Every structure is written in C-alpha cells, then in structure tokens.
Image (tube, rainbow, N blue to C red; front, side):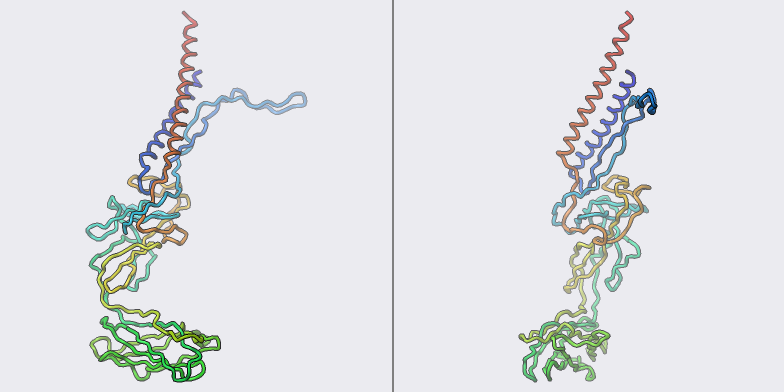
Length: 412
C-alpha cells in the first residue's frame, strides 16, 4: 500500500512537470524562433519479489516477480522542427528556412538564435532586440568575403564608394553571316576613368571576308584618345558561328586609352568578344557588361538569400558589405536554452560548425520571421492527457489512504 502511494506521488510530480512544460509552450506560442519542449517518462526501479528460474527436465521455468515503484522523468526535449514563416516586409527581419542558427555575441560569449528580428544601434552595429551583436564574415576592399573568422556586422550609413576605372567590357549578340563585305555595325561603349568620369568609345565592326570581321576603336570624348597600336583588331568565326579561340583559351583584346583630363594618363581595358556569334540572322551585337563606377553614397541596404548584406549606392552599384554567419550542430537538440530567444552550446550539442546559408545550411528569407513551432491543438491535447494522468495518480493515493484507514479501524 505504501508502495502504491509513493508511485502515485512520483506520477503526480511527473505530470506536474509535463504541465509546466506545456504551459511554457503555450506562453511562447507567438515567440519568434521559439522551439517547443516535450516531456517523456520512464519507469523507476522495480522491486524483485522473486527472481526468474530456468526450466529443468521435470519442471518449467518461472518468470521474475517484480513490483514497479513509480515513474521518473526520462527527458525534456527541445523539438527543433521548422516553424512557419511570416512575412513582415521589414528589411532587417530575416528567417531561416532549414537548418542553422544565427550567431550573436553577448559579451565574450558566443550564442545562437533562430529569431531574426534585427536592428541597427547608434553605432551602426546589427544587433538583436536585447543588444547582442550579430556576427558575420567581413568583406575586403575588393568585395570578397573573408571566411577566416566572424566579426560584428557594422553598417556605416556614411559609407562612400570611391570611383573605379573600367578594366573590362564584354559584348554579346550576333553579326549577320550572310552580310556582304564592307557591312558595318557600330557600337558605343560607356566606360569610366580613374576619377569616375564617363568616356565614350566608338566601335565599328566591319565585315572583311568570309567569317571575319575587323573592329576599329576610337574615342568620342575630348581629351581621351585610343593608343594607335591598340585601335583595331579582328574577330574570326568558325563554321558554327562561334568565335575562334586558341587551344590555350580565349584572351580578351586589350585596348589602351591616353587620357589628358586629369585622370590616370593611361588606362588598359580588356574587350571580351567571345560571346558574339555569327549566325544568319540580323546583326544585334551590343554591350553586355562594363565594370567600373563613379563615386557613390550608401542609400539603402538589404539582406540576400545567402546572408549577404548588400549596400545600394547612389551611383547604381550594389556592393556586399558583409555576410551573415550561420552555425549548425551535430546534435542541435543538445543546445541549452539561455533565455531571450538564445541557445548555448553544451557538452552534448557538439561544436558549432560556422558557415554561410546554402552551404549545408538553410536558406535565408529577408522580410520574414520564423514563428514558434508550437501547435496549440497538440498542446491542449497533451494538457488533457496530463490532467487526467494527474487525477488518476491522486486516486491511487486516496485509495491507498482508505485502505490504511481500514487497517487502523481494525483495532477499536
């Protein structure tokens, strides 16, 4: 009787713990990035009244006789399933679709979160709602992401982009194969000098023979001239209408400009004609891409699906300012909840595996937030189960108490 009473007590304690976890889940039903908890039970030790015996020639074997002594908590799990994504339209809201956690710095501690509602502080740092510094990979002067280590993401609204001279221009389109000799196709290419000033180059493509065109290059800008030794070249096509390239690979034609307007006096530009074709259709050769830019000021920024923080400048250029870091774990269920939507690595979670979105990690969706993965219908069902389980265990205790009362009443 006393055993049944203590078994009932252990059951009541366990169901109380389950109700506590359910209550916490329901309280966080609208918490961004929240991962619900789940309680599992296990039976406690068993008292063996008699052990098992094996069979003999004259008698069969017997099973052990054991009396259970209640239940205990087996685990309180963090369920890491994906929450639904809610569109917010805010550029600093970012949701992870798939595996991974944002990396933030809290003092000297590295923490992790699924809540992507970020903000800018007065210093231009990207922070969480509690002021934790969001971590990412820095970008060098050439716009290349340095993945050797993470650092605080800082967006300086006073950032300017220095002028950059054009170093390469590519062309595409078609030159009509059946055009008669001496047919000309004119193109104008706008390039930049080292001060960001526009230079207009005129290109005259003239058919000089079967599958062959000449290109004459001149400047339309005062103070800028094309070096005479680089003012013309030829483009040859094979019988399939593609540019003939040597076995070592296509090499762009290098044109040199002489500039007397105060910019760099000489400027070399690679002209890539490899995308031009010669089919029997109308001539449509045109400029594909031209690098270089004038001076620009940061006007706005956005976050891409791979976590790139893209700065949009007044000169029309878009440059990567930083890239958000994501971390995965061999056992994400082993992370410890640290409050404020944060997780902390533990002895059983494994070490953080840092990287960027899309490389074995989930994709990022800007302008959205991940909702809690709590399902209210499931939680209410579990609440009813826990309530009935608690009530059943109280009946064990009252029944044991009544039997004890009968024993006491034997002596009057």
